Image 1 (tube, rainbow, N blue to C red):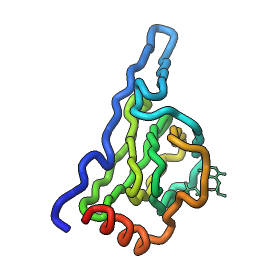
Image 2: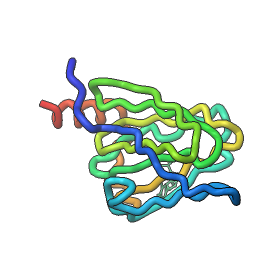
Image 3: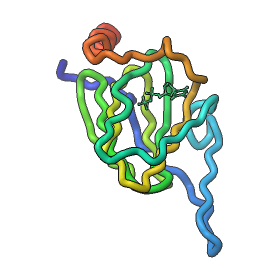
Image 4: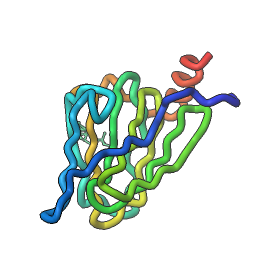
Length: 141
Ligand code: TYD
């Protein structure tokens, strides 16, 4: 377990079309992010001591954006681990399949927008960390 999988998560820089009136950020599926968007959801009013996520996906790809406030996301592919602090509305975190994520330290005003490559499917979730490690290790052999 000394080599990380490539491309399991990346920062995605978005363009603001802001002007004197304020900010506007447009995200075109398959152009500004590398997949077609089939679902969006957002988290708001999250209590500061809450940890969300705590799962991986078998197939799903997602981009998370703190469109307001800030939040920390710990990701691991079973080989390497990283903590990313999202704190602005033009930086997204793309998370590929088979990446365990923990989302925490929400600022009180935080709104996290998520763009997803598929509609909701509970069968795509891996919610047990040791199951995830088995999946991740098998895929990497
Ligand atoms: P949950 O999986 O607990 O969210 P998180 O992983 O971010 O902590 O989801 C909370 C509830 O919302 C749960 O009943 C499933 C439902 N849900 C949907 O119906 N559609 C969705 O796109 C998502 C992400 C969750």
